[in-house]
Length: 155
Image (cartoon, rainbow, N blue to C red; front, side, top):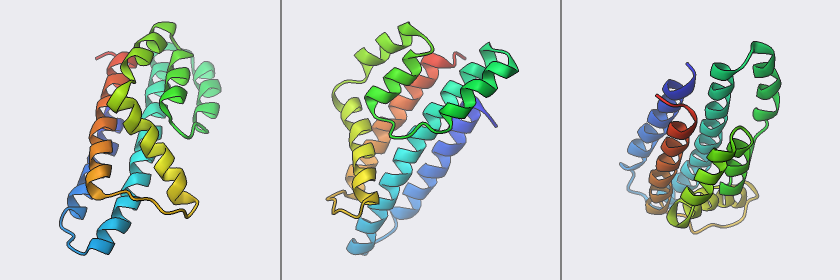
């Protein structure tokens, strides 16, 4: 699967994980699961942005160009709002303008927060992340991914 179907599959898997976590009652376990889900949300964001860029390359270029684009894209990490804007803007200046005006306020905060929290968690530092907070970030990240998908992979 590629493009929209792959992004939808990844989103469904993550939504199922959130649903399983919602049944937990132990506060300590919930706190641990919130950290785990934060890492997964950041990973989902990265993988979705990579998939969007790859799908654009697949549908608009020769196979040799696709291979050339794919290698550096597979190393794309830390999907901050600025890095997303720069990456997708490298394909189309209009996309960059759109994302610069779209990724503001709560969307920019959600994207940047989930990436920063992932780094904090990965480096073993304490976070005050909660299930409610991660769910809020995930809801906003899904909107950002949908916006980027609609922008770069027209239906």
